[in-house]
Length: 502
Ligand SMILES: Nc1ncnc2c1ncn2[C@@H]1O[C@H](COP(=O)(O)OP(=O)(O)OP(=O)(O)O)[C@@H](O)[C@H]1O
Ligand SMILES: [Mg+2]
Image (cartoon, rainbow, N blue to C red; front, side, top):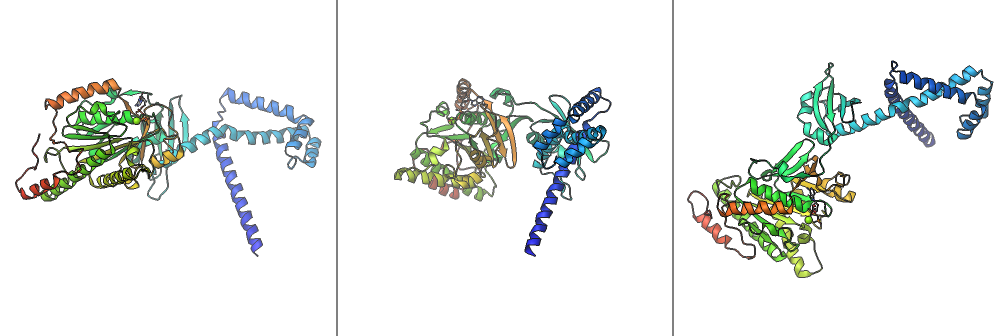
């Protein structure tokens, strides 16, 4: 009984697989047949050539012997005898039919593979009709080296659904969507795509917006155009990638971009590689560069206290979040380059105490600080729970991931292999926001350009042409007089903020 059952199941599976194989065969052959254009002389020439070759082979006894050697189970001696005895016409036509049946799919294979690849890209977008059925790629026509037309059978999914997802389509297909239009039969939709590769380098100045929104910064050039991001809505960002990919350059351009787009900013830059990368920022009156673990922890603690103070203020004023202009409090950006240096535990016990504190403070800040106008930007080569706490990772809204050398590295930052398959181009990265992944060429700002921008910013800040409220938070004293300030705030029932502008 059991044996019978097993045999039945085995047979069922076998039939199933054979059925599937036939399905694929007919599918590919269908594309192959469609490729035949009987009006084309080339097709007739190829067919004639094929028949001549078949004739030469089949009229040759040695060929049968070879077939017997290759496939002895099919071309058995009795089959061979049948062929030898059969009249030449039967002999020739059976081989021709066999040859044609085998070669037709070869013509359709390319098209089949192309359709499958596009189908995968469209599936990635998870667009489905009300009944749950996804759109189906029907045809792919390569117009020329750059242009492709894709025809989609899209029952129950209107054209507008695709139009609102043009950016996602561009990212998924790796091509620019030039046009989306309905075909004569409204069930079908035609996409005109064009391949344009990203430039290998794009200058910071090419992307920079003249009149950028406050608190926004440049992300880079994507196939769909230049991208910008408002830090208020992120609210925290991670920059990852192997050494030399462009993390520090991106980190610095982000800061310059933010500084240029916004008033009322305070920057606290933790650079435990002795402040080498962040040195150019040191002269700005609204920026502090922190170089040691001890000062880093002190700064984080003081910013945490500032966060508490801001929450008390919000509660008292029944407000949802800090508005730097209304509340006369600056947005605070905590930037940490080489974040793993601050968070990775060592064998040294006293150092570990600091590291634990830094980890706890960062978690606290990442969880709550958005409403208080406090944002984190972390850059690191490796992202593991040892380098960046999982809870901090969960609170990060945007990730810029430069090339990664390992699948695991790419998986931990993006949850997919996109950073592993990036071309080896400096500044090439994936910008990930929620479930959306976009390949970008990051803005390049040279050291000289950086120095120049910072000297202009310094002059503007000193002359108060560019404003910030201040005062700056202490970076080297663990205890502050924040508690007194909070009490003052509670006592002071008058309107406006407790802090006076600098
Ligand atoms: N967006 C960019 N476009 C072109 N070249 C870039 C870009 N970003 C970085 N580079 C080049 O790559 C070099 C290394 O960049 P960067 O110092 O930012 O790398 P990193 O990822 O911070 O490396 P590490 O992990 O070693 O600190 C730069 O000196 C610059 O020449
Ligand atoms: Mg670096």
